[in-house]
Length: 257
Image (cartoon, rainbow, N blue to C red):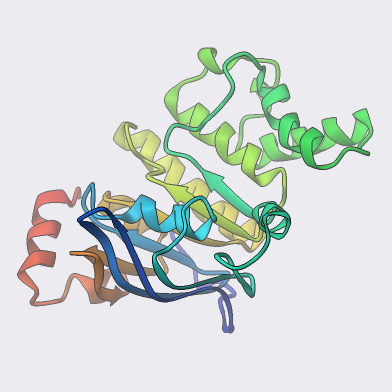
């Protein structure tokens, strides 16, 4: 699926990160991160394994606290709001885990119903079924509704994980290594799905990856994380037109044509 010029509203910041630092003991992971994400935009945070990409989105989701700096998500300071406010904010953030995080003891239907039953107590059986069917249709897997996760391929599990996130109608999607462990064809399908979700639901997204094919296919803008800071931001072409030898070596090592 070819990316199109979508409705990115550059007057509205849905995520705004300023001067963010995070260390674990003597390991200084994030060293002054600044990033804005606009309404309707896919931003790819690109970097090698262990550079702090996943730490960044865990801080955005309120799963980790920063050492210093500010992280505003949907106009709320994630580090300062109450636990109850954070729980409400998380309902507006879809988190697509690298592992898909499906419950093996539940069918696909039950996996998708779970967040609705937990957060929307007054839904009827008919409303639950309609929501599940809509979410599965959005990821092209309506036929799997009564299957078990163990019966699904890796790519199908990724799609179901995204469907379970979409069922809560989030404003923001956070994708953690969405193509990790997938073959090239399935990876392309997941890239297409990320773009379809963005266009269909007008989500704003951060996509964490070290896969340059994924970055090129999904990113309206790339931010390359090196040595705890963003070394370069821009479109795929702008980032890799740089004379920075670190970016050139990253491209030469990773890019799949």
